[in-house]
Image 1 (cartoon, rainbow, N blue to C red):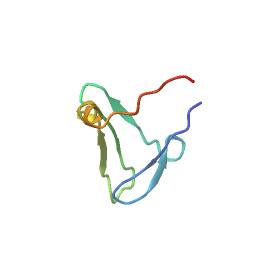
Image 2 (tube, helix red, strand yellow):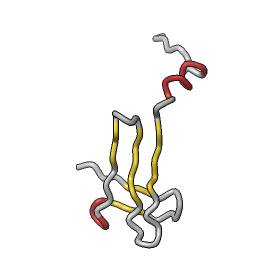
Image 3 (tube, one colour):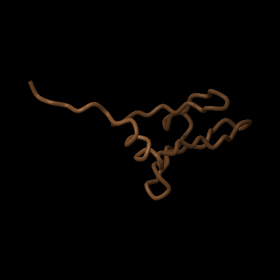
Length: 68
């Protein structure tokens, strides 16, 4: 079983599916990860977009690997 801990960027509240039913969404259509803070006074929509990640990786690629 996978255990995921989500920390809100706005209030710093720690969430897990076991404690408060937090849901982590991976949206490949919109190319983003997101979860909504379960803190009643916050409800911040935490979004991490990876839409332009491929373009950024072309300008700063990982070093070439080789076997020795």
